Length: 350
Image 1 (cartoon, rainbow, N blue to C red):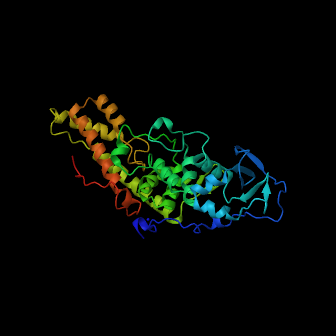
Image 2: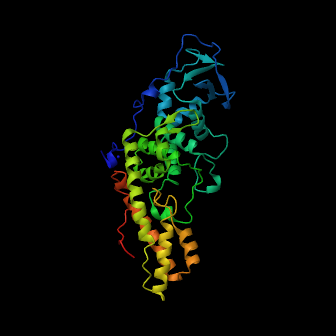
Image 3: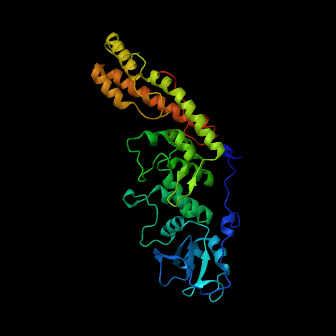
């Protein structure tokens, strides 16, 4: 991340920072020539005042509403004068440098068909996909619409949290149906907006892709996002370190050392040895998913072996402690310098 994590310092984008926006074409020598495009079914408003063309789709919307929400749009549309330049159905045409899918998702947020916008505190109002969140962040950033960019980041962080307590809570839940491959898009959105707190858990999630991380993440418009060379190196190196730590963590959790409150330490010791041996045979026990809890195994094997409740509770405590320690180490594992991460100083033994 010069600032945090090697990223440039956070700053507001100038309206001329994005070359792709500045390449928009708004003028043609042939007014009212029937263009070769398809009316968008969702955003072709019969009384619209401007036609935005993205790919083979045309969006007829209200110029005034767009310019009030974005200075970038205002500057882009400045050359659109009725009766001059390229036009269709009496409206000036602007060729957009975006995919129709991205533009459609942006318009759903800033020109909604109902009173619900994009993000609310009440979960019952949220009906989102990662594609919507990604487009909202990228398009909000590109067109200088800070409010929806902020909302998109907030939605992203409901899953890619920076808090272990939130992650480990039984209430940890996101209304968004995230998949592991979405972590690639999440990392890129975090880099785009300097939201560095998203990076450690997103990179951890990315490790689950294994070699598939090289294939990137394909958006709904067919665009493939890849990690930068530097972030790909961080993920691959981080995965190696997590895998090396996995068995060490496993044996710390299941070490055959009964609780000081155990009433039958000799008996529980023998049972804990058998549980530890069993856990060592579990396939993928040493994978990189070190933040996953072992509660189910502890309960099942504890019941099967008949260890006392005090020793069962001890195993649960060790499990949470080891995961908490690894959470605090994620920035270092992925070579990230994050000032406000949820670090923790925890004793090595229980």
